[in-house]
Image (cartoon, rainbow, N blue to C red; front, side, top):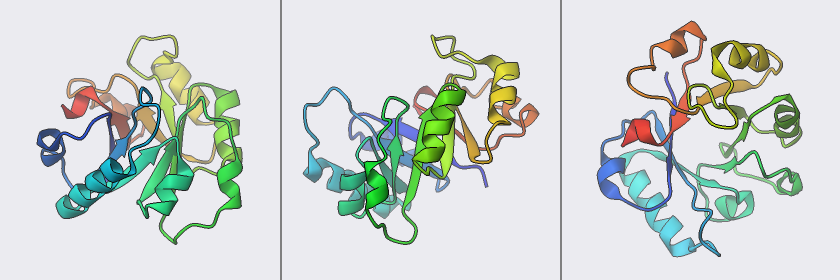
Length: 172
């Protein structure tokens, strides 16, 4: 099964409607001063109706409280406070990293999967294929490819023996 993770920053049904059942929706909006729990519940309800899993970014406590499917911990979040909580049985925690130091932090945070960035997108965290392969072998955690995934370069994931990926532009 190819899991795909689609990051959204606002609730737009037209893009969510295009997704298949293997797509997990992750809501992240770091520009807002506070989380709108009603909006999160609205997205949760819509995703549930569509048969899609829904995660919240950067707030494990609220994701758990609102009974979401999981939470995403971004690379800049180094906190382990969420380890003090108990979760429902299938609550999934994933997180992103850009280098070995951040991978070790995600392991301490006990994430189930590590989004390793950036594979294709040439930004300050650009890894490229060779560095990506080297770094991804340094953890036993499942790796999810992040950064610059397009329909054109999707076939390159097979070369890396990766089936799961995350992004924004691929889905829109």
